[in-house]
Length: 172
Image (cartoon, rainbow, N blue to C red; front, side, top):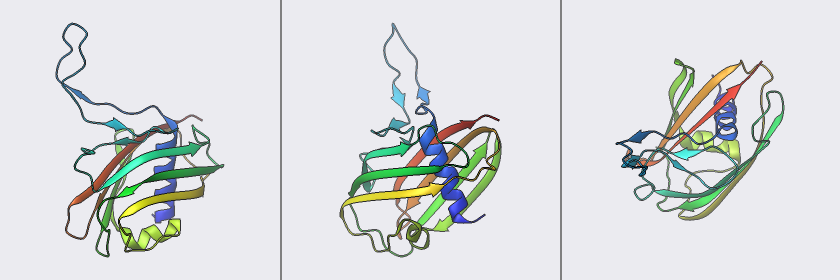
């Protein structure tokens, strides 16, 4: 599957549903759970961090998607901003897993520096503020169902830069 298709599926997932949350622990007397694995990212999207933001090598300040939820066959506008804490160089990889329900559609590792060209950027990505703005044409052939997308970015030393997760449901 071409990365543009993976990007389309990921942006669809990023754009549509409420944030995922997996709770560990018990609720006692209405208290919050002890641990929450997923952390929502500010903005108009359901993208969540699935890693510890304090340990991530990037800070994601905001992700906005329009329309939210996305529509098959339409253009999806994405705006994201954050800060790169450590230079991202050649050899960085992007692991993507896309599930439709319980069925794994994609489980693949990509060369991040090759794929970042799809959003008009190139490696190395220097430390400092970063903004990504991209329009993606969503295929009209997106099948109905609930998609869960997980994307993990690793640097050239195999250290995790960040982990993102999103969910979207398409109806017929």
